[in-house]
Length: 457
Ligand code: F0G
View: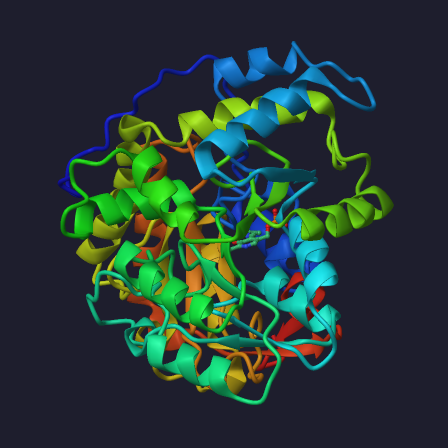
């Protein structure tokens, strides 16, 4: 794929949605009202929304058609049978429990497996994954390879687990109820895990008789990057590469809002029948009967279609091509971002973008606010606010602002607009001032915190 080339869209438009065009005054007012937290913005205040790639993509005509065959039977719906069969055939995991989204699946798995004081290793936890481990009073730890923390390294598999660190964690005194590997590593830049690395992880977890789970929400993007970069993988299909990953694991959690190509949904799957029964009880308590799991049955049908569409090579080449196109346009402006470019977004490297702002000035937030102010583009800080220093981060966190590209949603010209907006912010970067938090909630602070400019303006 040549990143300078316009990525060819392998679909045409059937429905359009008008994009708002807030004026500079509208944007200033919106920032004040939102307490400078971009999660508080309203969609009519946003020109291009790169806050997340989760549940914000466009469904296909086939998915919309699938909704029409929704069978809203409480127990035993046909749509569940199709969904279950699809997840089983892709992953090989026999027990499949639907949930309304990824964090609900995490809640089921961690509630069933974790006890207070347990340690849960992951290459890198994402925000809700970490919060759910903590919610069980267990201790999340991040064990990604050292290259993952160097924004300028071109190491091709920055999602990989540090095998030595994993060995030590499993040989120590702490009880480890499971090991998780997140494919791709979202917190570290949408970076892939290699199959060779997962084999090593599985060798270690088996030797210690500890279950291995995948956070598989971006598994098809991971497989695409493995296919490109890992020796011997180039001729294999996404389904085959995915299956090679699943065959090494005991189960997985999934937010279908990513590589399920739907707006809502998820699941947890496992080979362990006793665990599946325990989780089923929790599922009924928190989500709903095991044949719908907090979703409308029609949503399960749309997930079944989406999971197949996400494996299409032409779709993936376009998707990841869009991310690379955006990165290439940013590079023309000299904008620093994490390398190599990952699967679902470009992550700006805040330390190199705003070297004059110390950590106390919340530089990631300052940058996200300026990008919105400049052109109505919404992004998200993935740095010291989303991940304050804890045992999990052990003081090793990148300071990033993520431009997450929703699937099948924006055109190349809209992404070029984003690059130009950020280019203008980069040109005036020396004048950007710091922020402080004026309200800090206890858990998951980035979602609901309030901020104010440090200058008092
Ligand atoms: N795991 C990973 C790696 C994620 O990226 C997310 C969500 C979840 C689990 C939770 O899934 O949102 O369906 O409950 N990530 C979104 C994001 C929100 O913006 O990256 P969920």
